[in-house]
Image (cartoon, rainbow, N blue to C red; front, side, top):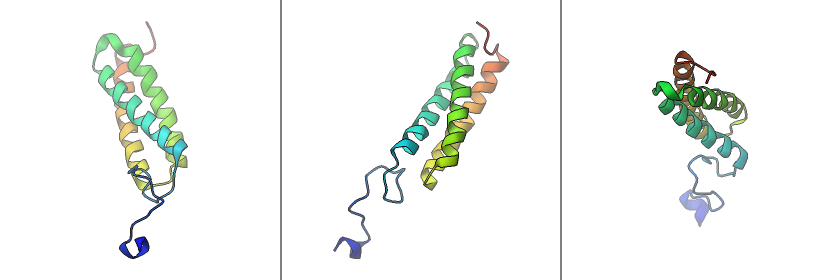
Length: 102
């Protein structure tokens, strides 16, 4: 009777898998983009950490843009865009504070 209630028995409890299918690669890239974007954003405000902010920001941007192309669900895309925005701001602040120089 699970079909009558509208529940999916094969769906995982991951909110990124809103279509009921597993997407391990897409989910991993999504989580990496968000975490690296947040790290870049946080370290971008500290002038002495400009190298870390620049590297993590550029890495999150590259991975995030690829993840956006292969994403399968809308929740994945929302998290990816959030990570991309944070990565862009963090990378811009890192580059403004000294970029890739030690």
